Amino acid sequence: MSLSNQIANMIFELLERDDSAEIQRNELAQSIGCVPSQINYVLSSRFTPERGYLVESRRGGGGYIKITRVPLSRGLLLLHALNAVGDSLGEAVCAAHVRNLFQRGVVSAAEARLIISACSERALAPLPPSLRDTLRASIFKQMAAALPSIDQD
Image (cartoon, rainbow, N blue to C red):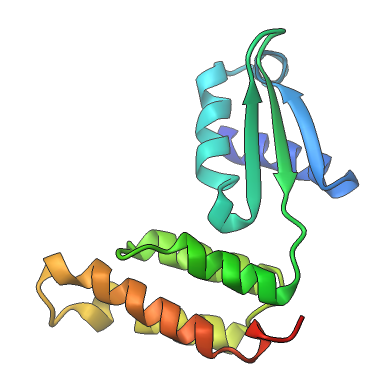
């Protein structure tokens, strides 16, 4: 198991007990045997708003970090995803939004595959690269807005 996976799994285990966890970055890094920046990397890549997490950092006292899983209803999760997407959306961030919606039960596996397929580089290949992220954002928003659970809360 990679070091990043090990760190992420430890944090996920803490979050299974409660929807939030406070960690001291230096202590966690020392217990795992890595540098604190590795903890930062895992937090910034795996515990992002598009994956349904808020990360707050507090200075002093060794650098405590609070990670919170955002408990939102299906409709609010969709609205959050729609609001998080601006005028441009990269393929990887789009896929992260869709995975989060799937993991939280907002979209089915079939709906997730359709959205990811429609927003893929392969689907948008006929367009100039400069236009792909703009169209991807529009497609994602339209597909997410068309899902039946948007108004049902």
